[in-house]
Length: 249
Image 1 (tube, one colour):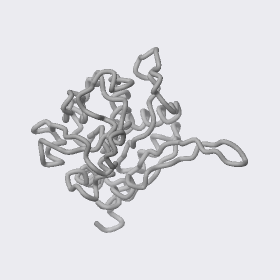
Image 2: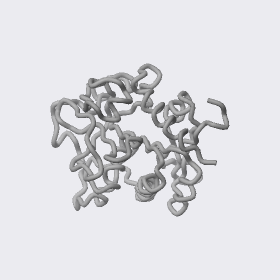
Image 3: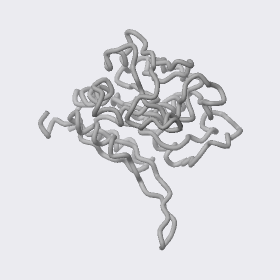
Image 4: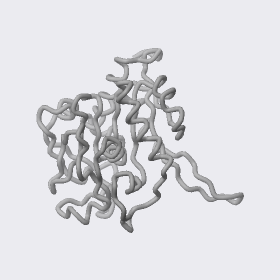
C-alpha cells in the first residue's frame, strides 16, 4: 500500500497520573503495540487527545478508529448508582470523548475496532450496561491471566466465535485463543449490538454492530498478540482495509 493511500487510524490513549518535582499532571499514554499493529498492516496510527468539542472535525479527517483499553468507565454512565470498590481511575473527559467518537463514527460511517475498555465504551455509548466486577458474577474463567503468571502476549483462555459473524469471517475460526486482563465486562447488550464471541463461563467477549459489520469490538487485547497470531492481526487488517475503502481526501 503506497503512502498516499494509507488510511489514518485514530487511536484513543489513556490519560495517566504523573508525579514530577514541579507538580502532579496527567499524560496521554498509549501502549506502542496499538500503533505497531496498525502500522504493520498498512495504516498510519494517530494518537488522539480528548478534544470533545472537535470530534466532528476529527472524524472528518480520520479514516478509522481504535478505541483502546484502559481504566474504568464511570458507573453512572450506564445507570449504576453504586461504585464497586475495585472501580479505578475513572476519567470523565475520556468517557465523554470516546462516547462522542462512537456516535460520530456511526454518523460518518467510519470503521471502528474497540478493544477491552473499548468494547465497554461502545456498549455503554449505545445504551448497554456493564458488570462492574466480573468475578462477582462469573467464576469459571480467569479473566485476569496475569494473576496466574501468564504473559500478556500469550492466550489465557479460548472464546467461541459465532458462525457467520463478521468476527468469524475476519479471524477465520470458531474457536479462538485470547489473552485476558479485565475486571469489567458486558452485562446488558445495547440494542444495536450482537454478541459474536463467548467465553467458557458465558461472558460476552466480542460484539459487532447489527448493520455495520465494520464495527467490531473485542474484550481481549489483539494488539499484544498480533505479531504471533495472524487471526489477531486480522482484526487490524480488517479495520485498515475497511478504512482504506473510504479514504478521506
